[in-house]
Image (cartoon, rainbow, N blue to C red; front, top):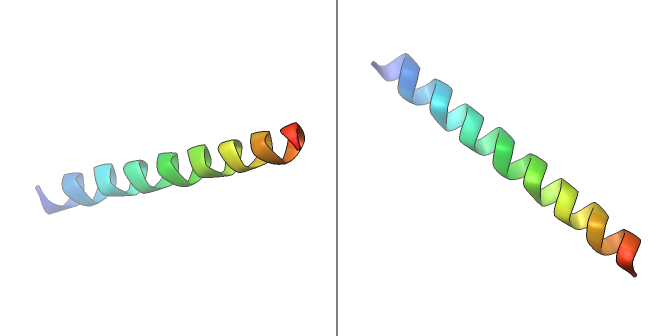
Length: 31
């Protein structure tokens, strides 16, 4: 059960970082 929670937590963190990077790149391109 703990491993599943850790796995989903990792996916959530990875997706959040990816979205942050994409948004950052988009803002840089818009400027």
